[in-house]
Length: 232
Image 1 (cartoon, rainbow, N blue to C red):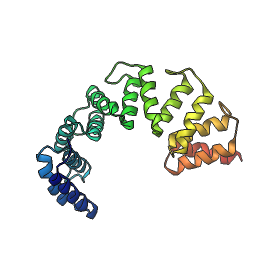
Image 2: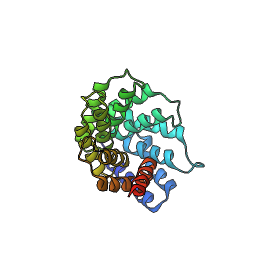
Image 3: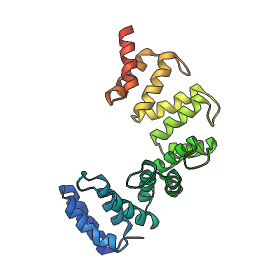
Image 4: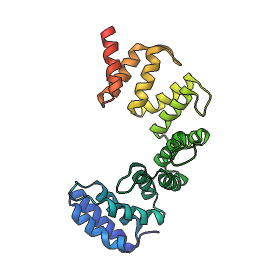
């Protein structure tokens, strides 16, 4: 559904209020369009209601609005519903329902949805476990440069899950994700560099990667960094 001129104007007024920090005015601007079936307005109100402070948060209404928007083809709403059902935000955890909505968004080439759906196939949560399907979905998300998918392909490649075990190829995936700032990939690549598995041993580069990951709170990276520093 394409927004009408009046809905587009209402959406812009809502964004102006949001930029001012006036969330009540934003919701007020978007509500008539949402009530009229505009999926973008439905999604934006749902997103606000999901993320407001505890006293103003309304998870049940947010889920209702996400559902309306998702059924109208709003891809971000479809992905958000996947997160809602996977994490149990305002609903009972239902990984099969999460997989359904991730699948709808994944079909529209939404990389985070592809990655999350791949994780469900990898673990067999809500769907039948299927490592090859997981690799396919991670691969589709990785093609769009999505760093968690690149990292997860590295993990599968390093451990020979759904892919032939190949430490050098795993290191390549980790490096691609690490270069995009993903702490988990920086840590895993640092481990490989510190030990010389799959790559030439390079303690200085490992130390640098551990430091980057530790700076954003990666506990194991902090521990390994301290060990390298203690060893000189």
